[in-house]
Amino acid sequence: MAGEIEVKGAKNSATKILPASLLTEETVSISNLPDIEDVNRSIEILAGLGAKITKTGPDSRDIETKNINKFELNPELAKKFRASVMFVAPLLARFGQVKFPHPGGCVIGMGERPIDLFLEGFSALGAEIKTDGRFYHLKAKQLKGAEYFFTTISVTGTEAMIMAASLAKGKTILKNCAMEPEISALSRYLNSCGAKITGAGSPTITIEGVNKLSGGKFTVMPDRIETGTFAILAAAARAPLTITKCDPTQIESLLAIFRKIGIAYETGPDWLKIKPAKNFKGYNIKTHEYPGFPTDLQASFTVLMTQAGGTSMIHETIYDRRLLYADMLSQMGANIIMCDPHRLVVTGPTRLYGKKLTSPDLRAGIAMIIAALIAGGETEIDNIYQVDRGYEDICGRLNKLGAEIRRVN
Image 1 (cartoon, rainbow, N blue to C red):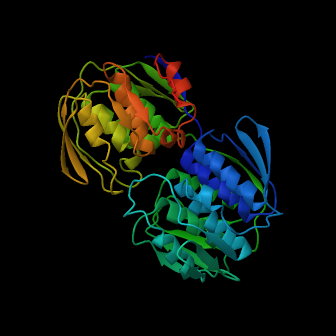
Image 2 (cartoon, rainbow, N blue to C red):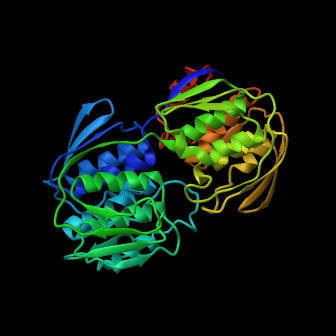
């Protein structure tokens, strides 16, 4: 494998800007949308609510929501992906009501990914919350500004509260906020539409509510998780790879580790080149909220450590049940010891062999693909819908680099 691969728009930005279009009656123009399942399902939810959506290019849409006539999320769509919960805040803020089922998505963190933070936050802004066992019903004639402290740092919780507070009456102060770049991008966009948000990208965010927002234009930022995933793939495969249309500054936690373990690379304003390393060392990681090591790169990094010299500790601190893939890597020949549900030890380097696998979630799915590409023999991966949720045309893009991947059924 070798060559050049382009990073697409960020899943975790696109799936927030699409719901944010509900905050205004005017047209919102969005470009650099990735062609992935979660984005397509978000567009379907908007259309089902009554939005007018016009395709203006291969990766761009104009969205007009002035004729929205429903305030209930399609349960079949909402249960398919976690980001469906992001439609709740803008519907509640603009129309004063919303009805929705518990959001779906990956199996990870079923015990640690409840929507309590969302409900607590909306309640703090004055929303009345009821549930009938199947749906949540939220109502508020007028959301009112409040001070809210996140007991658990939450990216989607922070983004949801920013959207809700933008149209609330008065000032809202959010504390212990997540600091991901996607939050700053959303806030800059809302400010360009007339919102008054300060402090995005820091632990404390202040929002002065406004009566209405105008339309605007938004270009989805490069996907930093995709950037890191391709960098790890290149390092694991010892393949010279140039990653384009990316922002290397957003994966500094990974690149700092590369420097320490002996993986050479070069960077430019919008590109990253990974150089083949004959040998590299193991390294202990502990996932952490941005700018720490991303939980979404943890599974891929574990695959990389199966090829590293020495012992590495992988400590997952963000989500429960996110190490479910470890047994599959062991079946492929990896030397992995599960210490407890949150920690595993990898000893390498080991040769991996093709097996029949099942992707338990989005990020483990791409890690399985990386493992398969560096393994001997043929690997079959089931449940690839999870991978399609976050990576556009992954087979076609990797095949252009020299991989041999084909879809079955």
